Each structure stands twice: as C-alpha cells, then as structure tokens.
Length: 429
Image (cartoon, rainbow, N blue to C red; front, side, top):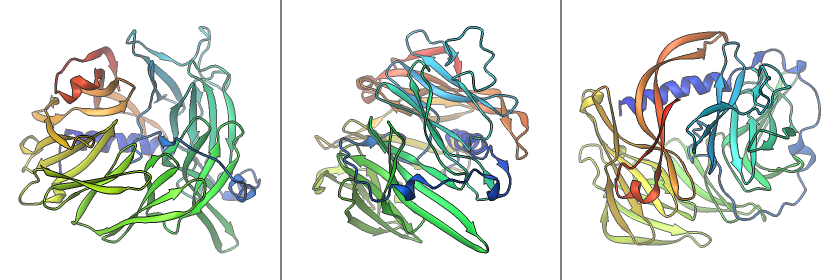
C-alpha cells in the first residue's frame, strides 16, 4: 500500500469530510417532509445540454470551489454548523462570505451560515454564480434534506433552487454548465417491509431546480468520471471487471466504449476525451465525439518493475495535460518514492514533473487543487495544525492534523517545474 503524508492527509480529509457528509440528525424516515421527488415528476421532460465539463475532480474528492478571483470552502464551527469562507487571491485574506459587518454568522440571516444537518455541503463555482449542494443522507435512517442553493460570487442574493426529500441524495462527482448540473441521484423509500430504491443520472436546471432522469444505473458501482460536449463518461466496476460508457445527455443513448480487467490498464480522462496506460507502459488516447484511439510511439510510463500498474495513479488533468503518479513502495513513508509525470495529449510528449513538498521526512509531488484559466491552485507546503472536527456523536473535538498551505502558480511554471508560487502567507486548510 502507498503510505505517505499525502495518504495520511487524505485519510484525515476523508474523516473530516465524512463528518460533514454525515452531519445529520438521526430519525425515522417518516419524520421527513413528504412531497413527490422532482426526479419522478419530470422524468419525461427533454433537456438540451451542451459544453458540459466536470465541476469537481473526476474522483469526487472536494475541498472547496475555485473561481478565478478566489477560493470558496466550508469551515466547521464548534456547534457543528459551518461557515462558507472565501480566500481572496489578490490580497491573500481569508474572510467569511458575508458583507454585513455586524452579522454574528450564526443563523439563516447570514448568507455564509450553513446549518449542521445538511448531510455535507459541496460548493461549485459555475459562471458568475456560486452553488451550494447539500448532498443528503448516506443512510435511509438519517434525516438530511438535500437541496441546491445559488448565490452571487460575493455571497449576495442567496436562494434555494431545489429541495428534495430526506430519502434522496445527490452524489459527486458533479458535471454540467451554467444552466445544468449533472450528477448521480439516489433515493431509498420504505413501504412497509419493502425498500424501493432508485439510482440514476439526473440533470438539474440551475434556474428553476427542475430535475430530469437521464439514465438508470443498475449498481452503485457506476460513477461519473468525465464530461465533454454532450457526453458523460461513466465507469462501472463489477469485481475485477471494468467498463467505460458514454452517455449522450440529450438523446440519453448510452454506448459502451471499452471493457477491461483489473491489471490490464489504467483509465485517465481529460476535458476532451479519455485514454489508458497499459501494463507495458504504453499509452493510447481518444477524443470526443468519436473517441478514435491514437497511440504515442516511443512514449512509455516507467512503471515499478515489481508491482507494475499497481504503482500507477491517474491524479488530475488540465487543458491538454494529464498528470500521472508512479510510486516505488518502501517499508516506511519516507522510503516510498513518488514520481510525477505529465503527458501532453496534443503532441504526445511525456515529462517528469519535479515540484514537490517536504514534510516529516517525506517528499511528494505538489498536489493540484483546481485549475484556473492560466494558473493552478496547489498545495505548496504542509504543516501540523490543531483543528476542530466532529466525532461520531456530532460533538466538536480538537485534534492534530496535517494542514495545507495553498498557493497559485502559472500553468507554464508548473509544467516546467519552476517553483514560482504566489503564496498565501497566513491561510492554512
């Protein structure tokens, strides 16, 4: 197993985010407000959608939402509620996203305040709007009503676009454009001893919250992994069998693009298509809408000789660049080596990326949080920090964690491994 500071930090983020996602008050399902699901009432309504993209990372991990001018993220308060925070790139200051200087930020009168029973909050920057998605419950025994709220990038004009039953859930990754948000939707309802469940891909109109079912998903193991043009890329896993399909969000036609077994190849996706790294290190790539495969002669990812593809991870992608990591395992995190490689899918060139962080004797590649138009928001440093988190009883507790120091870097500097950072001196996450 790859054991490192990044792994440990990811575990702590997972604990913290799980606390956000499960910050619901338990109770019987019948206690929730009863109303018809939007997914049921609008099943037959057609939608016209284009120019879609992923709004979160392909793997669904979410630490906040990056706009061109600043970064938005929720911060947990001692009482379990949250505040929506804003990091201004120009000034490097961290503020509550509320313009009222006399506001106490502790109830619905504050646009930045988020109650404790939201089931996890996902911020998304889409165009000139900021969306807050309360995901809903991970369990039918929890009472968390999913909803989507919309506000300006300055926090003004906060409105609820859509609200669902507590038995419903919106699942990342999220994709879409300024008019539509696309994601997996799941509902679970009890009728006596029977459990009626629904799992599908849904399109949600951002202006009126109307939700349309696009395609049924047979298993919880199907997830969104890419989005481009009019197509969503869906990956399904069954044991060691994988399949990749393209869902046309306008015709709802679903086409199987590829199938493979564990250990044969590793999938990566970009804003224009998808590709694979094979067990011998060679790479192929196809762009939408045809996804015609092309190979890159003479280009090969140097995998670990002992564990092969198990040493390879698809990390991220921006523009026409794909970021891959290869690790050579060691007996301790400090002895584990992680090398990062960048693939340009336009010209087929491969280069090693050497920007890194050093912490507790461990050296690791710099992590991209979000791509902007010309820059990247990255984690440039790590440090121990005391934070407030919620325990299993939703009570605040203090613990030591590894905190991130964020920075901006121009894409060309990142690609050429030049550490020309714009650091945020006093802001840690």
